[in-house]
Length: 158
Image (cartoon, rainbow, N blue to C red):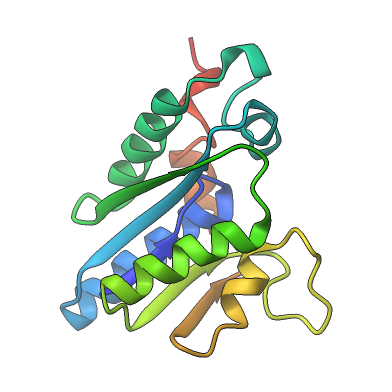
């Protein structure tokens, strides 16, 4: 099983695409896991919605699921909802739990800064990458076709 830390961002989309490619070559399953806080400010910061007033947690989950299936049709999707104002450590704990429960052999993370010597406190990717219980594949660059095929959010489309 390959687990992808999935938030719909450009690099998470690239990580999911990469995991799907690896899975087809190695005959593994892929699980995209989205941790979605019940927090309008977090949703705006993540680019899921344009304003706090537009936030609907279930709509965000549905949007992430739809985008994940567009990228990797054979992948499974799991959403974990958490409360307001989550610390990066809480999100990482949810991802680690999912990885342990599914016996994931590799976690794919899209992150510009995961694994660097200095990791920002808000970097979920960096904290996942520091866990030595699983191999971690860090995707730092999204190929151009990921930008063209998959906008960050369909919320901005009419």
